[in-house]
Structure formats: structure tokens, C-alpha cells
Length: 249
Length: 249
DNA sequence: GCATGCAAAATTGTTAACAATCATGTCAGC
DNA sequence: GCTGACATGATTGTTAACAATTTTGCATGC
Image (cartoon, rainbow over all chains, first blue to last red; front, side, top):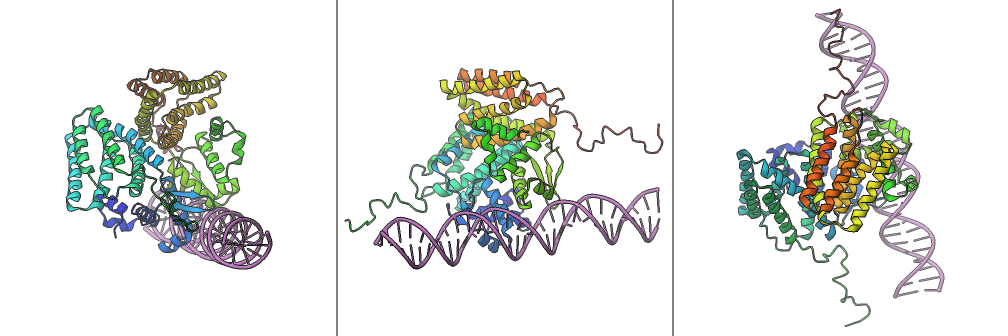
């Protein structure tokens, strides 16, 4: 099974086969990343160093280093003397991430809108074609990846590496949030929203572009189920009232 | 000698003495941070694991973990099989960092301007008073710290923890850039610019606030000497023409 | 039956020794 | 005298064992 992340890198660089030659440390980081974003590792799950070390055939030291990376990206939590746990972004956290993205990507949209060229427009259109392709093929997995990369492409076009790297992490974090809070029937309509975004960018008006970007990010957020208590591993709320304390009802 | 960072934390929390109780790992991170920002560790300098381990009385493993943190913040470079080196931000990198800050802090300024309250205004004014104090006392060190914290305060008032944390790293990175490229006679006039910024924020107009923030960040950048080749450790350029190859002139 | 305390197991944190890699200096050969 | 191979030393990368901590299970006492 391909990994979401290595696939993403492959899409980006155009050489998927090359991903086999990743250094072991990067390989492990990406494998764990994928497992988390795929929810093969559920939020809150304990990550035991030695088990992972054996699984990947490396020493615990390397797993520890990988943990530091993932913790830095807020994808796992590191608790002293307790270990590592897959992150469980709260609703407030999710809202803040979207808010942060809006602040940053508004700026990205402004820059891209005011620095648009025919070549860049073509580049964006080519990407949208691939998004549409994936959508029509019914490839939900690829659609999610490409959707994230659309935002990353705009960040790259804005010409600032610092912003690009930060947004990359924020998009990963968003992926975890979506994995955790997405509605049961995932209605992936973001590809049409990306079309609208392109139109706004082509208008050349930074305010129009920023407004459209904000609308898009809000729409993604609003498609999530951020109002529910959303059961964790131990969900008391949905059990209360049904617990047979002695012999009630 | 107090550390810049622990001082900063102390200013922030109001309890400097408490910094002694930092966990050793954090202590080491902050010590190294300070040394880098103070230029006691010069850009490009090799950081040898064992020496540092002995210096701090810990194992190499901890130093290694600290390196990962610092590398993530782009304050050191980690080269496989070669070791760790204090980062040497290039001119292009410096320009990108300021550009990134402008994109983010424009948004911060907009939010703060539109959500201003009398209490918040007082909070900002109180901070500015401390900046003026430090300036009039001639305490350049404190002035630099407080200047950075001014921007962090605005980020906090913008109410987004994600942005706040990212900006904190970016400010550290800016500090290294300033340490590397500041002009010989440091003219610290940023405290008056912060006054102007407050006025803009009080106007309540997001566009005015964002414009003032951009102007301020550009001003900081323009006070640096980013045009020079800026000699590294081994400065050939300034030696060329004087080297006696055999017996020429 | 339930809470409390204790002991054993599991897991993380730390250290030291060993292996692999890279930088430095030396020497032979041209 | 200069170039390149080689040996040496320094440094990083890795592993395994040990110490400290937390979790779990069990027994004891109420």
C-alpha cells in the first residue's frame, strides 16, 4: 500500500520510485505520518518505542528522534516519563488552525493574484485538471492529496519558502483534523471551490482573491462536525443514562 | 550573566527566579539559544556533541535532541555525518524571513485593530512604557528583548496560538539575522515606530494598521546591511590583492 | 464488595561502549 | 615541488545494557 505522503512527494517531484531511496530516518517519519493521517494509528493511541523500533528494524534512539519531529509538527504528544501519543486536536485547536491558515493564505492569495502570469495560470490549471481527474475517477484518496497540494502550490507561487514550509506543516495538521472530524458522508466539493479560487486569482484584485480564499477555508471547516462532543477513546457522554449502576430500568 | 531568553521568559511571566527550575533539557536549549543570539557562538561555528555534553554535564543523547530542536527552528544546520553548525542565514533567507513576517503580521495587525478594547490598549501602552524605560536607561539588551516581545504581544492579542508560536520562532530567527547583519552603529529607533504602530492600531482601520506594520518591518530590514557580501569566517574577498603569490608588486 | 497498598511487569530515560564516517597530516611517487 | 594514496585521529552514528519511572495486577484489610 502506497503512503499518502510518499505519494504526495512523488506527485510533486514526478519520481515515485525514487522514494525507496529515502534515508531510513525520513522513511520512518513518513511511514508514521501516513499511518496517523490514514487513522491506522488512531488519535490518542500510545506509541511504544520498542515495538516501533522492532517493526522498523531500527534502534529506539531513531524512533525517539522521529518522535521529536512529529511532536514538533503537533501530530503526536510527548509526555515526560509517559511516552508518545497520537495527537487528538480539540475543537478549539481545529478552529485555531483554520483561523491561522486563513490569516496566512489570505496573504498568499493576495500575492499570487497580484503576480499572476500566463505561465502561472497554466500551472494552476494543470493542477486543477489533475484534481478533476481524481474526482471523476472516484479516487478519494488522491483527491485529498491533490487538494492539499493545491494550497501548497499557491504558497510556492507566492515565492516565500518560509511560508511554504510553515503551511506544509499546517496542512498536515489539517489533514489530521479532517481525519478526526470529517462528516460520515464525505462530500468532497473542494475541487469546484478551487475553480472559483482560480477565477478570483485571475481577477488580479488582491481583496477579491483573499476573500475567496477565506470563504474556501471556512467552507472546509464548516463541512466538519466540529460541534459534536466527538467521542474519544472513552466516551462517557454517550454512555451516561444507560449505565446499569445496579438494576435501574 | 543572565540569558536573553530566560530574561525574556521572566519578563513575560514576571518570575525570573523560577527559571532555575526549568527542566535540564529546556535549560540547555535556552542556554544554547542565548549563546547563538549573543554571538558567543558565531554563525558557521561547529558544535561538537561531546564538548557540549561535558560542558552541560549531560550525555550526548540529550545534546543530540537539543540539536534537533534548534535545527527545526533553523538556528543551526545539521549535516549528516558532519555534525551541527550555527546557522548562517543568507541575505536571500533574511529577506524571505522579513517577507514572511510581513505577511503574517499584517494579518495580526488587522485583527488587533478590529478587536481593540480599552484594556488591550492599556496592555500595549504598558509594554511601550517598558520599552521606553529600557531605551532611556540605555539598556540596549533589554530594548532588543522587549522589542521582540512587542510583536509577540500583538500576536497573542490576535488570539491565535498557532500564529503566536510560529511568530515566536520567526522572531528568534530574526534575532539571529539582526545579530549577523546589524549595522556597526546600531540605531535603535524601533521604539518610536512601535508608538506609531499603536496609533495605527487604535485607529481601528485594518488597512491602516497593516500598512503601518509593513512599513515598520521594512524599516527594520532596511536598517540592516543586507547588501554587503558580509565576510564569513574565512574572508577571501578582503584579502585578494594582498596575497604575496611569489614576489609580485 | 470496594478501596488501599504493595509487588511485578512494562516502558521510558540515561549512560557508556563500539562501529562507521569524515577530517587531517604524512609520505611515496612522479 | 606537487599530486594523490594512505594512515591516523577526531567526531558522529548506533547499539545494548542499566537505572528510574510508571502502569498493572494482586492481595490484604476494612
